[in-house]
Image (tube, rainbow, N blue to C red):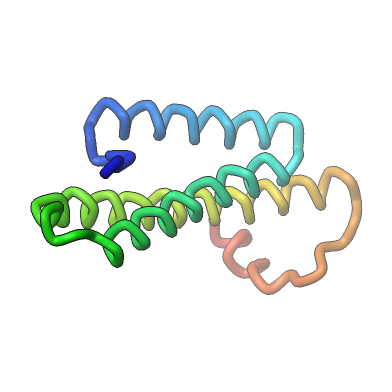
Length: 112
């Protein structure tokens, strides 16, 4: 069974670097779609790891701890990419002058 093990420190460091660079790129070009792609990729990784845990065969039960760590890391990256998407979307709406559909996080951005 193939597992994309993101709990490996080198893989984790590379994924973090790629995420930070993509968020920086999205902030510089003021395109929230880049942040949405990053969020979508991490959501697909989360779904893939949850499906692997749910359909894990009995001979692969020793991999449950690795998959659990991967799911926890997936949640952290989804959290980071979601808030970075909201931040980049706010930057994009201010730069283009268009109004956001729902401005319910305005209180959050004022505090940050």
